[in-house]
Amino acid sequence: MSFMYRVLICDEMNPGELNHQGFDIEYIPNMAREDVLRRLPEFDALITRSRTRVDQELLDAGTKLRVVGRGGVGVDNIDLEYASRKGILVLNAPESNNVSAAELAIALLLASARGLIRTHTKTVSGVWDRKFLGVELKDKTLGIVGLGRIGSLVAARALGLKMKVVAFDPYVTDEKFKMLDVKRAQTLDELLGQVDALTVHTPLTEETEAMVGARELALLKKGAIVVNAARGNIIEEQALVDALHSGHLFAAGIDVFKDEPPAKDHPFLTAPNLAITAHLGANTVEAQERVGAEIVDRVLAALKGDVSRGA
Ligand code: MLT
Image (cartoon, rainbow, N blue to C red; front, side, top):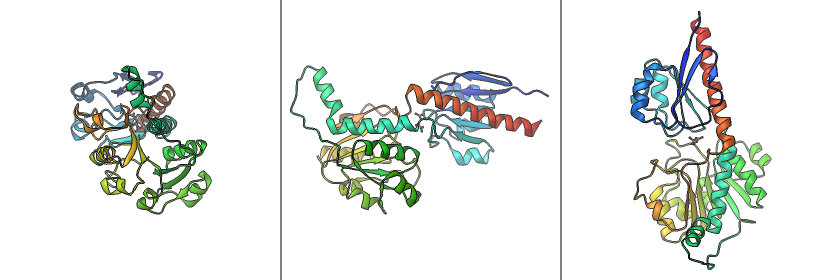
């Protein structure tokens, strides 16, 4: 008995080879939500990135849906509980874009320290302003919240810049801290009080949403730098804007917003000393090749498992 499983990839990625025996894979990058809803009943699996909200409406529309694959790490755009209630397997590609995400965090840290975005904007608008004084990172302390895959890569790169690194992560062993040459902070408050720059690398969960708010930002030294290339609103957006306007923070680098794309009047867009990118942590040629290959492989393997069970 032969099966033909159908897979829809509705977000932009590099899915690699689409011809796999026994599978019909359709790649429609940046598909409009109403089109996904309309076409989904034809498919056994859906592969997305963070752009597509896989909520109850979408999961209900996928009447044949067995697997949802997330091209990337975070699964916060997927209603995991509802998927599991419906018996839909959710998979991600947890390794593929870690280096790219870590490199962007470091890029935002450097951009913040040296005012790259603001000086670029001034220079291209014809203003030759050599007054801006940046700060060096060498011998400064970087605080990392979340010492998982991406946080560890950020730590290694910061040590390469001759920074000291301290992290807060209650789920990581002392051995790993030692191996990475990172000092452990027992609490978030303890971390905040001793760092010159802060970067967060946690998933977005009930525990981490807005975990750094006005109170926590006030615990940072005056003149600190803040980076968020993880998920929007782990650092509360308005609190961050206020800390930039008041001058408590020297600068910040942000790749992610609570709602994406952000509203045209989002306060980040006019905040001083803020380097912004458009959720591009995973957007490198290398990461997208790896992400596409990994998630397609994992989804097809899951469907094949389903075939052998069903055959
Ligand atoms: C991730 O969670 O890995 C990224 O957000 C992936 C993406 O850019 O979609």
